[in-house]
Length: 467
Image 1 (cartoon, rainbow, N blue to C red):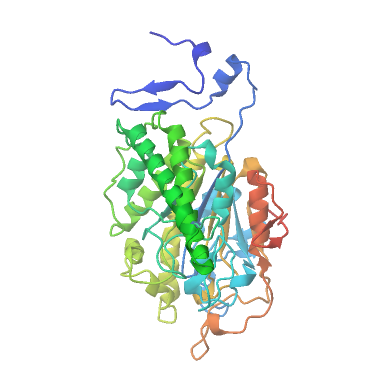
Image 2 (tube, rainbow, N blue to C red):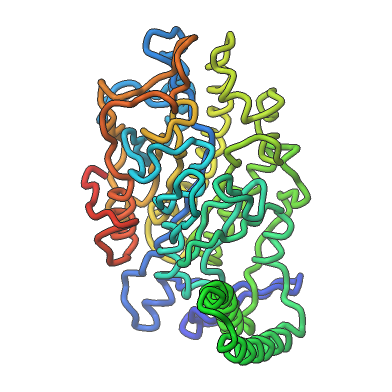
């Protein structure tokens, strides 16, 4: 039987032979028939990808500088990629490379601590009390997260939260607590696309009831606690309240079928021990999450700032045994090229993902998915764990007003830009001249164009008009 277009709306479903159902997006054709606005509303998505341990930055007098310095040569629109980034050449007009920005509160930190504050800008100190704050992605998730099944998708190669100052996640809740990252493709896929069990509603009801009882007990217990214990107990209750929010949101989506996707090309049992396929699988899951509008906010921490973890296998994709060691071996013969070769691999896979978005027409609007998706790629370290001059790439988001095809070199010719000679202290131990621009200026601009009304981030006001 044929279905008339006039009877279709955004709550219609396509049902396949496998028993899955796919909720139709708000097609422009159907909107016109229904008398809605002829101009569909494009979604606004955001994804951040974090690369730890800095990037290759040989000195200008080093023979490796021409090919293996991570930042492009030149500036403005007159720039050329080195071998670290030249896989991104086909996307040149869709991205901006940025130097000379960092978080003021983190500039004296050792680079091993930087993933914790890349998206927060918080002052985490050295060995003092650890007080983080909300991350950029979660600010946007609070703005847009109730429009999708998942407020955000938090991913990393190592998974979980990791220890303080050596985190496995770059996402932090409003109270500064780390949000555990998922790292197993099968679990991520099942969470988003596996068919809900028959008793999902009943389980949600039980969860809500259990939480109600827990809160009643909590109110009674709080009256018996000392002032110091009450402060600790409030931290605990914050976690319970977040669980309440998650349960309430799940109850609103429980009766809607999960999207149906073709996953035949994915090896969901892949692990980081097969790094290239693993990375491609993680990127593909992010692509599917965006395409099905399961979420509009994603973070992915490619690796952690130190060695001894699953993510240290990633360098095996290009023939090296361990990833972290590459940043320490740049004084050895061929060291800059080896480190650069790994960064080139990372650029290839990021470029493949961005190109996939560019090649996909917006499912429920105009332009490509890349036009409506803002991508931030970067690290909070530059030369050998130096917490300044972050290497950054901003891509996509043209429909939000971002202009690309440029290298914004705020570091300038006199800023610290390179490696070091034998006998010199490591870059993070050296006194660095010049001041970076606050990275919060970029973050405020990003949030504003994503639709969030704000004038500051991490206590710093200002915007960056160049993007």
